Length: 243
Image 1 (cartoon, rainbow, N blue to C red):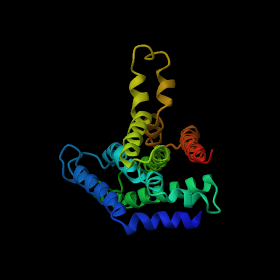
Image 2 (tube, rainbow, N blue to C red; image 1 turned 30 degrees about the horizontal axis):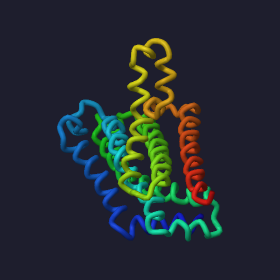
Image 3 (spheres, rainbow, N blue to C red; image 1 turned 90 degrees about the vertical axis):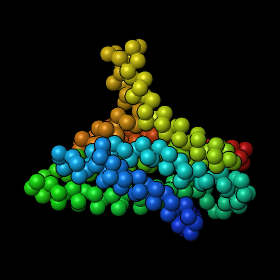
């Protein structure tokens, strides 16, 4: 699995894909957080990175499916998937290697945003006057959210040879699990009755919970369960080719 992991990392950075993903993410975040006056951290009255954690998931809805769309679709299209499954690797190890490689690329994109934290830390009055616990809780939530999106993207990529279809399907599923349950909870049939249960089925509810600075076990269990569910579904999707 280690060899597959490094192969995937090399594939990201030996082509333009890895650099484009990281460049687009950092450019968008930089423009929104430092240039556009509506979200600019410099125009804010408080030292906070709330804008970063509000916007990053929206960017990830499209960026992560773009990263994962080629994971299995390209392998099926070029016929190299058959070679891969003949190696001494189980389907679970193949999925895990690709999952960790894609997640590593997302982490590389997130690391430079730590500069935003140190900048806001120094700009506070007095310096350091900000909610560091909430910020690091939000970073943990963002990592879990990214991992869930990567797992969803791998599942979508395992279903089709078309990278475009894999991208659209992954983007739809990510949007569905992130936003739709929150919207459904506001319908009259749920509102005031079971709206909190419906919200808890979606990613946004648990992501926002972590952003308050308290990493609740229930939120961690939710993310790990969702990730495991889609990784298991990806393993089954790969296995059907052998059936």
